[in-house]
Image 1 (cartoon, rainbow over the protein chains, first blue to last red):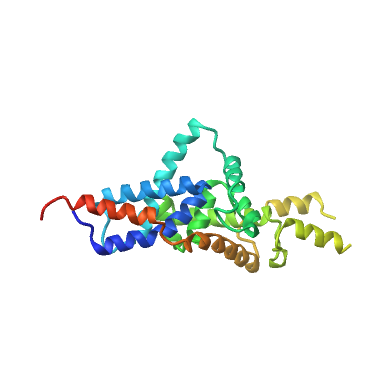
Image 2: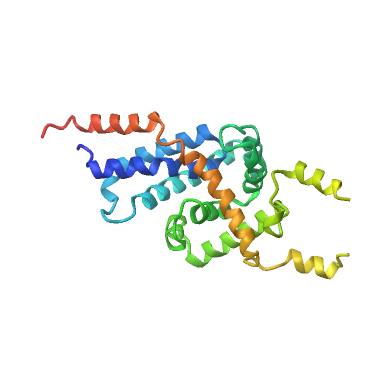
Length: 182
Length: 62
C-alpha cells in the first residue's frame, strides 16, 4: 500500500525531534539513530493503528520510548549499562551532541534518573504538554509534573546554581573567577 | 556558616522551589542542546528508509 503523502510528511518531520529525544535517552548517537530507524519500521508496519487527526509526533515518541525501555532492559542484563556508563558515553562524544559549552549541562542531565530525564526532555525540550508527556510515558499527569520538578531541582544542584547568575561558561572559569575575587 | 538544620532543610527542599530565573536558564540550556540535533535536519538514512518502504509497498498492483 503506497504511503499517504500526509503520513509520509508527518513521519519525516518528526524525525529530527525523535533523534534528539533518542540521543537524550541513550546518550549515544549511533544507538539513537538505530532506535529511530527501528521506531520508524515499527510505526509504518502498524500505521493502521494510528488514529488520523491525533498527534503523529506523540504517537511516534510513544513507540520509540516503549521500544527503548524494552531494549534497555534487555541490554542492561547483557552488559552493565548504568547511568554512570551513560555519562561516560556522553563524555566521550563531545562533538556528536552539543558544543563543549554544554558539556557540564549534558553530564548533569546524564546523571538524572531516566524517568526524570525523559519527562524533562519531553516537556522542556520536545514541547509536549504535561498531558501529552503523560500519555507518552504511560503515567499520570501529576507524576510527570513531579518528575519534571525533581529533574530541575536535581539539575540545579548538580550544576551548583542557585540563581541565573551562577550559570557560567564552565566550572573552571567559575573557579578561576572565584579565586581571583579573593 | 551552614548549620546542620539549614543544610538538611536545603537538601530536603521541596521540588519546584527553584527561582523562575534558574528554571528559565535550565530550560534555555536544555533547548539549546536539543536544537543542535534538530538543526541537523533529517539524515538521508531516514528519508531513504521511508522511500524504500514506500517502494516495497507499491508492489501490490492497483
